Image 1: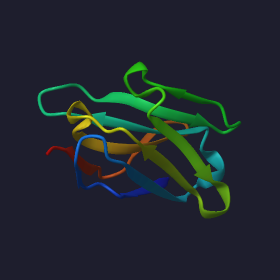
Image 2: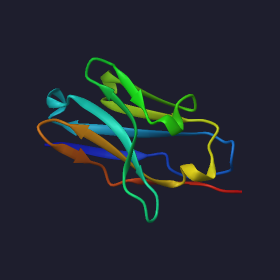
Image 3: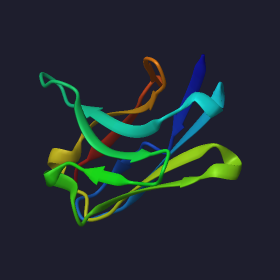
Amino acid sequence: QVQLVESGGDLVQPGGSLRLSCAASGSISSINAMGWYRQAPGKQRELVARITRGGITNYADSVKGRFTISRDIAKNTVYLQMNSLKPEDTAVYYCNAVTYRNFWGQGTQVTVSS
């Protein structure tokens, strides 16, 4: 089992920045990849960014050049640095960990509005 706790969501103005954190606990050694997904009202959950055990990253086209996923292995924490935020980035952001199955955090709300 893997437990994930997200933090860092907030209300921010367009053009602003936020950093989300996801702390993992439990069967850390079994994690093959971790990532961030988001779900806006009335829309399907979508991948935002992911980092594999080997450190390979991939991003949704809509966030390339603005968002950066990183990790602190010693702290078992994954981060999502979000810059140049747009209103369309408004969503609940979920942390995900992949082992033999998917594990999800409870989600953190990001609202981009003036």
